[in-house]
Length: 160
Image 1 (cartoon, rainbow, N blue to C red):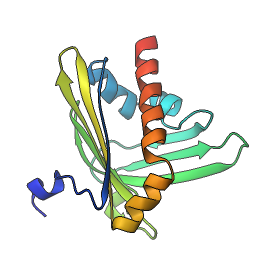
Image 2 (cartoon, rainbow, N blue to C red):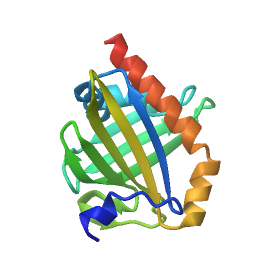
Image 3 (cartoon, helix red, strand yellow):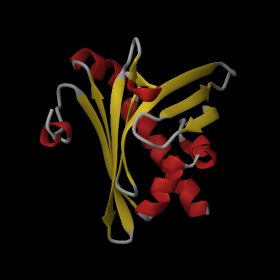
Image 4 (cartoon, one colour):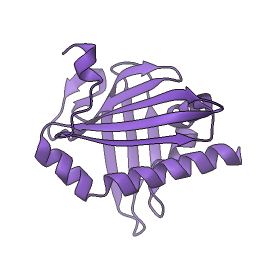
């Protein structure tokens, strides 16, 4: 796959959340790459993130544990594919650390941060294997959930 295909939106298999936010992209990057920050915004409240481990390099692990309001825990493990400081994070749950294939991978995320005045044009794209995977993720509440998480990220950054 060439880079043009990798960066191109496919409406049959992809979901996207795009918004201009009133915080600098360097601070958005920090919220995505520092576990102590990510734990505070990465799950839509009242859900929380109880654990977070990040190895910020291609092939490195990204692991979170989301906790429901009832205390049930949901571990998530993935692998970073690409990291460009203050510009792009690409990760997937289809691979584990070291690019090792895993069963039941669901999606690959491409998160981009572009300078937009004093703020950031934030784009989160979830790429799925097929249309059924996209539909499942959409029905799980992709737009509402990822939008709420972005609101939480912005609030965290603005709170300092």
